[in-house]
Image 1 (cartoon, rainbow over the protein chains, first blue to last red):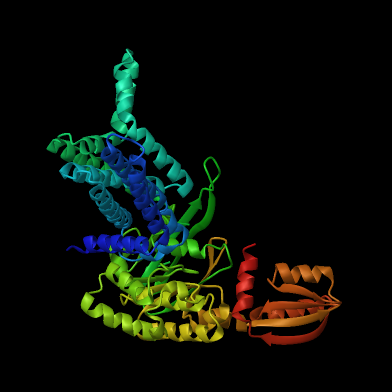
Image 2: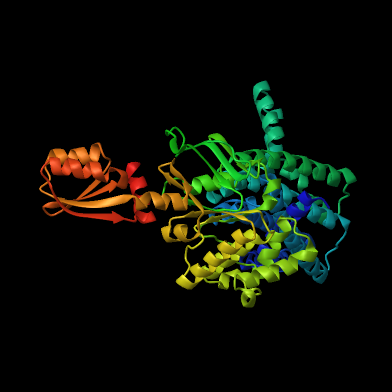
Length: 259
Length: 313
């Protein structure tokens, strides 16, 4: 293993350790598991498709709590290090700013994936107890939620690299909402009848993240077929988009003064 | 200033401007400073609050970027990072990852510096003993006192056995016994051949520890040289107490002879460089003043420092 990789992994490991020892995150995961459990109660309100309601609620809980944790922790990822001056001793070691940023990012992604695994286990237990079907579609849906969270963390890291946690959380949450609707924006342009509006909205769609591409919950819950490209294309898209966002974060972070 | 081949730190024409906000005029905090730190010495970087000490140190540590000028450590531009495996740093009032134990904390920094696993644990044991924290190595840092944090901070600065160590106010928050322990540790670092760069405002520590000093006031270097020379410069100062001093004499002493005057009722105390004492006495007698006393003074570093600060106002 190269020394650069060792440093990045050391920083990532420390970020995971910090999260594991942070009780606030346990509370969030506890609420997510509780919400998945309440799907059982919600499903009893309906006479039909009880298993589907249960799984819809469960997958939505995993996604929303995952995004909440990603924003909650992600926006303070860099700011906390600067504010508490822990970054001073780290950057005085043979650690470049790029390695620092990547280490923090990968550490938070690993933490989130650990939490998604806990929530997925709760989802599986509740589904089995309710007699709801479980299959590869559910695994693909939860896997893409995990990939989507990695992209959201990249966006949170970008904003965390240059602004306060309050603004960074507003920007990230805003981009998450807009990103979830970016396909609708493009559709709006196609049906607008105006060439300019279509070009502008198409341009916006290409710049904004397309988070809807990570949503396989309908296919999973309804047992619809999922093509391999429905999984791999979003994975490649997330990798490319995250890489660009992190590159921008690095460029900004390299220029910063830590006063 | 010529480049010394034995220098481990070199700063040339360093300028730093801070912009308080968009559209606001930049504030210059370093005005083209320059100095060097030689191998194996304890170098004191001294100045009042806001003089630019921490800004200079942060530039050296790569935490802020200079507006102009050059800074290098061990011949490497400070914007590089790989050479930092030979550099140790303790920031002022450090805050560390308090969820880690002392041992985990040192292991983390050891890994970042590429200390091989085989020697890492032995090094950690040695350092914990050296800073008096062997018994607290497995306790989380959130349970440490301020003095213990300062000591574990010094241990992290040394975990990779660096060639040059930068300490920002290393005695901050320590009781007298703790200060003595850290002083002894710094002296031991010099014995081991390491170079120590120390930001401090505690002048007694400078007198006790530092081979050379640089004094910075309002972003400008007022003095760079050996501590002994600096103090010897002070020994040549003499205190005259004069009575019946006409205003013209006071002006002459201040402006022509560079003396410092302070009032003592109807008498005035005049502090003048020893080489100018004869001339000052002749002028005083010629002006009809009465010479009450003449006392050679060994000026403390503190008063020299204050003079340097006053000269900058």
